[in-house]
Length: 115
Image (cartoon, rainbow, N blue to C red; front, side, top):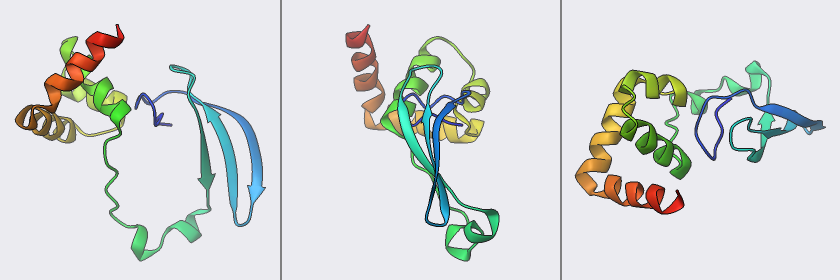
């Protein structure tokens, strides 16, 4: 599962699971950054409705920081895409967008300040 904080596809651990209305509420913890979050899971029949088709999932700030960090370390776009659960093309577009807006360099400064 993809961590909403660091954006990496990791083996998240389920620490609590409860029935909640017509869903299952699970509390998870990331094996990489120890971030906790809650997921609500529904069965396939309830999820497969026309309004849920082709939903774009935007990039979180944690994913952007992870993207810039991995790109600066010299990882290829395809490998970064596999780690973040995105396509190589999506990674390439996001990097181009960050470079064009100048946000890439501000994220790079943020990363250097944290280190």
